[in-house]
Length: 312
Image (tube, rainbow, N blue to C red; front, side, top):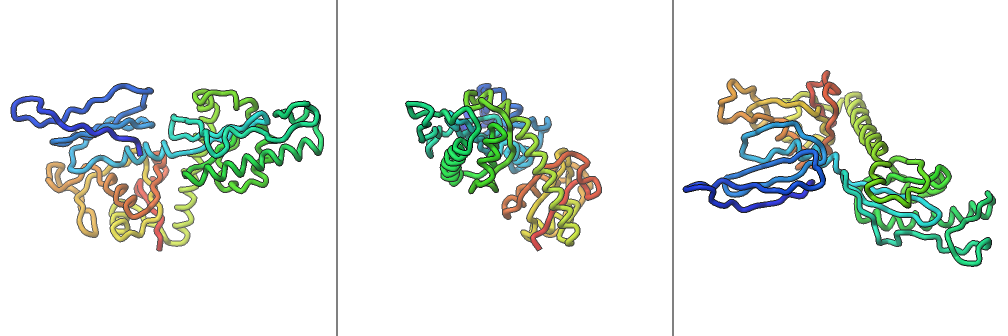
């Protein structure tokens, strides 16, 4: 999740213990979350723009932090080039080049067409050239496998169509491959420019993950392993039965939580009412090991704006 900064409060007036939250503007975050308490406060940047809301509660707001974390989930970018392949690790709009595990990976075999060892694979198509390319990309794939052991996330591959197909065809990391971006010369780009190149691919991957979650919901409905609506899901979350929780981005509802049910709030002034019970549902589901996916508004209209795939 996004990194937090913690500040001890300082007296801001006689008898006052208000926390002072301070931050400096950095690389144009799309939003900030501010969570003050009597003696401490937390603030953090969000990679996606959260809705403008003020919530008074005795726990920190979770939904927007989780949604931002899902937008910021880590990923890898492998840039293929016959002159030297590069690996990058990203989270949201941050992209850092990996300089370990053998990266940048340069070809290690000399070319008989050149007196000096180098990156030239020959200019004319030939079985030798293709075999040397396969050997080189096999070595890149081995180095990639070592790096992927250190973290999760998909690998978006950038290169020519032939380079990408040759790598993926026999890759030991095939199940981690995300989107493929055909672009020659990307090994010369800075991280900032590379972000622009892969942004459409990342957005496509996120959309596909959302569609996959909705497909999993459809399968759960067919197998009668699903729940819909806040009250029914509340019961299953409390029992640890939720495997996948889907929530519409803008869904919010007030309720009074009880052991096995949610009771509608007779008045917003009721001291037991929670302004956004969905926030508690998300936090509890994550605590039981469930996956949480936020989907566009109206995607779950026929399921009460919130639905879940159950473990059993």
